[in-house]
Image (cartoon, rainbow, N blue to C red):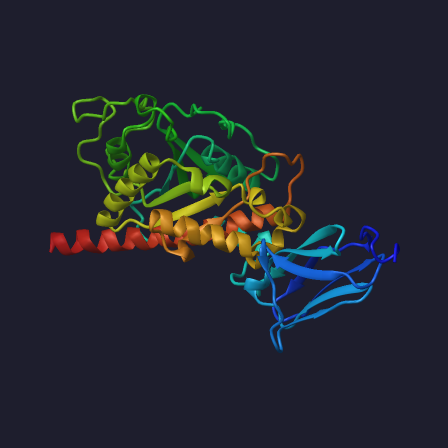
Amino acid sequence: MGFFMSKPEFVTVLADKHVKIGEDIKLSCKANAEELMATWEKNGQKVDCVEGKITMKTGKSFDLEIKNAEEGDEGKYTVILKNKRSNVSCSAMVTVELNEWRTVEWNQDGMIDALKAFKISNEKVGALHFLLYGPTGAGKSSIINTIKTIFKGRLFISCLAASEKSDTSFTKCYEKTEIEKDGLLPFTFHDIRGLEKEDKDGVHTQDIISALKGHVKEGYMFKPTKLTDDNQYYIKNPSLNDKIHCLVNVIPADTISMIKDDFIQNMKKVREEASNMGLPQVIFMTRVDRVCPRTKKDLRSIYKSKKIKEKIRECSMSLGVPMNCIFPVWNYHEETEIKEEINCLMLHALTKIVHWADDYIVKCSNKQTSFKK
């Protein structure tokens, strides 16, 4: 009798499982005694047998089997064993790998060559202009560093980047960065002061809108008050070559839900004006490794990650940007060597926005031609 009433103990415990969609899941552990009552939970909720889907076995071995894994089967599973004297429990994480829901070319050479050879549809436009916009520490300057690293073939850290914990932007003025690879490439990036916690320290929303419309000269120092048309840095009659051709919102994946409402509202105001202009708008979602550590081990699995897909969906709902215009990217930050998978992920996003920006150029050029007629 003393044996049966002894405190239950595990001989073996549950192990974490990683399975693909459609595969079976089996969780198993062993105890030091029989005649124990077993209860299974998933994320704190009781799991029951479901015919053809979930089965449970008891004895000295306690098994939970789930047939044909789906997205919803992912979670933390716990088995609780008890007798009249006490109970013990152990847990394991089950992750379900999605089928690849977006494809990336994991060879950088073809994408680099295509971008080097890209010709803007309107010869009067010297370069496609991209404006990077987002909270301080989101990784705007780091995106520029990463793109320069790709085309220079070595780590590039010339752009100062704010720490993710900093409340103050390193970027104080309107800066343009040209990209070189055997000469200038046909696109430039414009970095601005980041959204900051205190309104008095940030960039005025109207200045962002003015920049989109081509009214702001390079070198303008951002102030809490908006740029006026009598300022030396104000361009009164901007040409298509002065305007921004694509708005790139930069959002950190791990803090999407913590971005303050006033930040979101300011970003939505800018987005609304960009929409009125017919301007392409995308999101570069940074710090993906913080929400899906698996990407740190295998970046090429990023478009099989449920967590990344959920963050893209959350980003889409917060800012109203379609999911196919949101790109998870990885900035060089810890690395001391070039990694092709980091380059390919950024090049995939860069190739898309270059073509969309050029589409905008064509649309604006056609409007100007029609107006002259």
